Image (cartoon, rainbow, N blue to C red; front, side, top):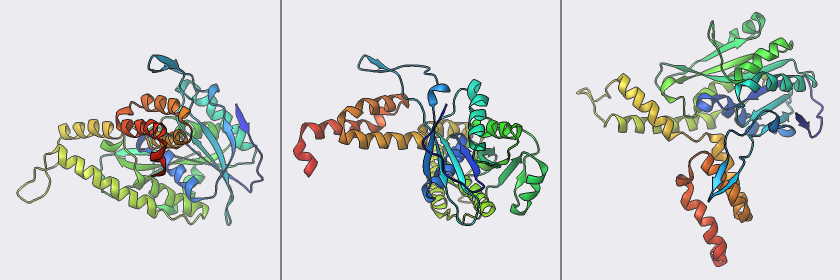
Length: 326
């Protein structure tokens, strides 16, 4: 179920788990941690136990089974705080496997005497994409809520946290593991696009709580870029119609529905999937037989047209080796 490559020696580790979800908030927050800290892989989830193919891939009449999403465990050594076990799941399994998967993961990290878990999620709100966005919290007990009072975050009084990013925290509580889910506010009409601002706001709290001294400036810069792109999309959808005061008209319900639909199309490819595609392109440049896997992944996400020229260039280079040295 979980294949352990080796067993690192860890000091009072905390556990952070994340899967893709709305706004890519959970996954991108954890991915940022992996990128800026020196995390090393030490175990892998056997995906075949939790993911079953729901369709086959077809390429020029030839069928194949799709590759299964990966789930990787990493560890990071901290200088002045607890060590960290980080789990990144490329995709969420069907809900009927959610609790079983959560139990397996929690049992595994408890072997390392883990006593605290962080999960992350998005909280869609009726806010503008350039507005200040808050962070909400749900915890396994009242004492933890008091510990986070100093961060001026809002308590989620009622509601639900769907998917693995929520379910695993409930399972953790049953297994006597304390922890929190931090939810970053995102505009509800941008739930299909990554939200680095929400990631940055969450990671600021994690950094202070664990004493990590994280620099989230790259996320803030990325947030500005995405906000400008959303501005362009809104201007386009509204035809850049302005009032006599030179300010944009308020969004109508019809405008919002159109924005949500267009953003879903604009952002149909999650960042995690895009990174996998880029990795397959690099592999195919070295070994053209990998192009079959690459084409399957492009078809899986229905983005072949977006990458068609780049994909065909792989074969042009192989047919004319002189081009490779230019």
